[in-house]
Length: 623
Image 1 (cartoon, rainbow, N blue to C red):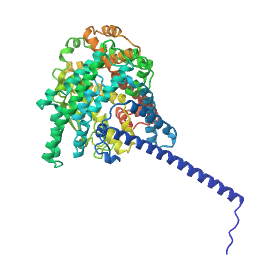
Image 2 (cartoon, rainbow, N blue to C red):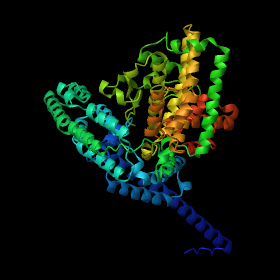
Image 3 (cartoon, rainbow, N blue to C red):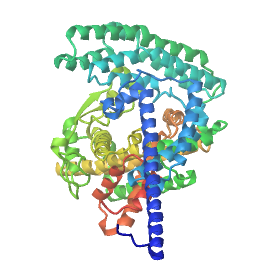
Image 4 (cartoon, rainbow, N blue to C red):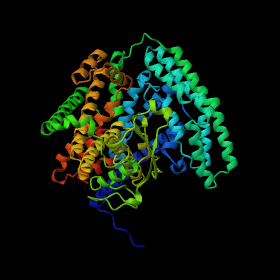
């Protein structure tokens, strides 16, 4: 047998070094994958738990839950309870503790960004939720008493199970509204009940949104839309006509014996709570209102700027918009006399579908194509592929909801079903011409519909972590919609010039700056009311300086801002943050900057807070 030669000291040292290095690499890889797997497990649990906790939210987020690993679930319309509130705080603290054990540097670039977004969002939510009684789920302009019927009316019936889930949700509306009444009772005990004037608006909504008279006539929109949604299931053989009749009968029963009495009980309970001694004030007048407002501002806008910095940003923009109006008025003095009467006259298009088609055409080359297999390859100048364009229906808000709904809104499509979309127009003010055109830009193309479909398709294509679907960033979403709305004023001016309407085109330019000026002013007032505790008289004086001398108008402005803190800032500060991000992109990318590249970056990042977007842009080359 041949004897193996002895190893030299050099060979032994090399072997030891190699083994140590190999062990180090193995440990590194173990730790690296350990962090990735741990993060995947944590976020998977968060996503599944959140989806199962609210069937309504899950249905609007996922068309096919089983594709996302959700097979069995209990139909739930979760209401409020003090125990659930405390449990939620504890859960948030536990999640943050688990995330702290993960080394962000050992995650993939994609997961590291999600980790950053999730951590920042949870940390702010934890602070905000310590002031639970400052929340207002029954706000007169955006409360669940008016939002729930719309969500139920648009609850898509894709399968038989969807119909049965819907009816189960309807059967829980009494418990749901009872829990909200209990929350209002606890708010009252804590000295944080809304004033009687606001309560009366909510009570009136409860009395009219689902009334006995309208249900008895069979004309309520929750009756008509139910049958409209059943019809495709009958047509494709999913359910029989007999089964559809049984479902319709059950819907009638639940509307009359559960939902309508639930509204009636809520109205009665709120009436008992009315306290005329409670004044209408902003958060700044409440014991910890300023602290809550700062966390709410972050949640609603995604901006981490200090409030003095935000005020500076707003004031600077206000001066710029004011100067822009003065410049146009100086160069074209005749416009001011004609402005109010001609800005929407002779608008070339009147139909919503024609306007949407024009907007899609004009956005070509400035905005990227949808991330879809049928779209052209990404690159400068890529166009929206007509074969990948989702269908969009423009509907009118039910007359019974016109008084309580915003002028227009887009119902967000599920991440896995972006082919059908709905935009609602409130006909209360009968928007036409320029107003309708820019509204459709805000809600449709290149606004909410376009951004939502783009994000959803991009997330699926890039296999983004599902937990990102739970992170909501109002400033990112509404800021974008306002950003492109202002761009659509330029489109409208171009359109009118193409049809020989130079005067109307100039009016559109003034209207763009005037709208921006108005939203900027209201955003400054939001800070005055909720952070500086400005009184009605102080706000009225500010408005008077800008020509709003009608007391009814001043009261309406003050009331809306006091009842809906951060709402204007969600739009306008989000818009200004996008402009600041755009400035940074121009500086960082220099000659490589294009609007197309910036829009691609913004959309590809997906909904985010602006601090994270800024940090990411600083490490990103022009797309």
